[in-house]
Image (cartoon, rainbow over all chains, first blue to last red; front, side, top):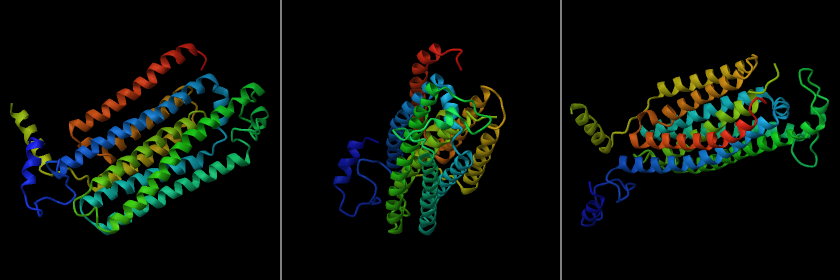
Length: 244
Length: 112
């Protein structure tokens, strides 16, 4: 239907016209509005793909150049915490998917429950990440003046190759990229959790269980996207360079 | 001709407000698959497979990401417009990686 024609047709209707209050006049139907919003969200996510893509690209290039340093750096990460965090984030994606379902079947209590679960799992992820960051500070593996190459020149792990001081300095590049990528990912999580508190409050007011699923669905797309970034960060940072 | 008409009907049904609702059993199945694949990829990292460690880890990651995009993000049930959008994003990302890497990988060829 011609949108122009529709707009002029609705102008003639009285104030109490026959559509849900959340349906904007320039859309023909709720599902059209929902799909347009989804489309916009996906276009935003594509810019995010390029944003993280640049960092992934830098990581791949420098890993090629300074492979021994990247292997040594990667092996200082705690694989158990990394795997646990992956499971936590996947669980939070699941509870977010269930939130969308709850909004679709218009169950307010269920929606609030799953949004709250997603918030809790988001905090668990950030907490575990905090423990990992703390360990890096303790080990002097944070790039900067306090960085120590000791562990890489005289490794305590018998499986590790001792690096020359030159190459050992390059582990700073690994940790810079580690903190940049996981830090940007964590920032996205923090923004996501803030938005979740807002959505939870609006859900409590009953905003999303009267057919207006779109904000929950679009936030879900964002949250799943953040999950996907971690799905790639996890093998690249933790797994592919293990000593065997 | 017949299939063409049917797809038009399908489009009309979508615009009438009948969006596909994904049911919890499917979400649970995807959730459990993602957990199993996480266990698999961590397990595989302890086995020495040379360069294939990276290949397998990234292949599993791509498969996990596809599950998330198709089912958690509903692309499997979405319109062709959204499928095309995701495809365009993937294509642009591949350009970013492959055009940058043609230079750097060809310089570092044989060193890794």
